[in-house]
Image 1 (spheres, helix red, strand yellow):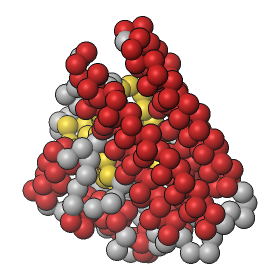
Image 2 (image 1 turned 180 degrees about the vertical axis):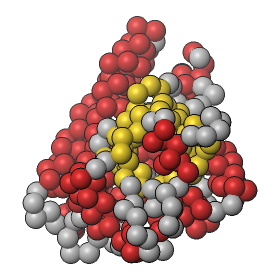
Image 3 (image 1 turned 135 degrees about the vertical axis):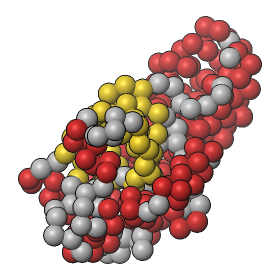
Image 4 (image 1 turned 180 degrees about the horizontal axis):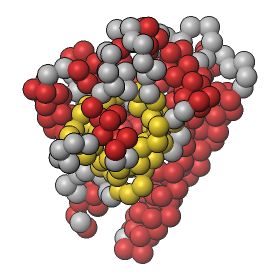
Length: 288
């Protein structure tokens, strides 16, 4: 069974098993091993509809631009999972993605939008259709919209930079694997995955240029050559991102060409991230 589906199976598994996954997730910045390795996973904390107590559940998700999507499959069981009922009663939840912890508002998708998103999920992994076939209920699809958040879950700014970088590394590795398994065509969800990581890179580099780099310009003039190089690399990576967006956005996108562009972006980005970490992590940790 595909890794993406595995986290949703846990909705019906014993609480002690869930707790093992939660502990491993939090100890390893969102990474878990075993059969769940490589799955896109969040920890979703909802407020109990009856108890009013917080409940944390590991849940698989789908990227979707500036929101994420979760599917209340419960492994194809006859009842909606508890976290779904909790969100219907109180749509505000806490999301942990391994890098950030943030507040989100849940929206239950309906009608054509729900059907289109679920079809995307099935195209990416037929296991979703198998879950739907096992139950008479229509499996709900929800969007989680971030409404508030804070800095990365890290003990220092240098560690925070490495944490964010590693998240991009992991997502690109997942996309490379998905493209390799995509066959002759490029599925709609895979297109969304590619475009979402492109958007994330754009936001990250823009925030660095306007925030961290601007602050270091004033505090550490000796870093001028380093920051100039990093800004130039941002521009080159932006061109790679634009090219990937162009290839992915073509109606007849060729998976082989997408694979090449993802590989090129990965190589250039990895060199950039490694240099930035080497040069700036000691500075960030020294300045606090």
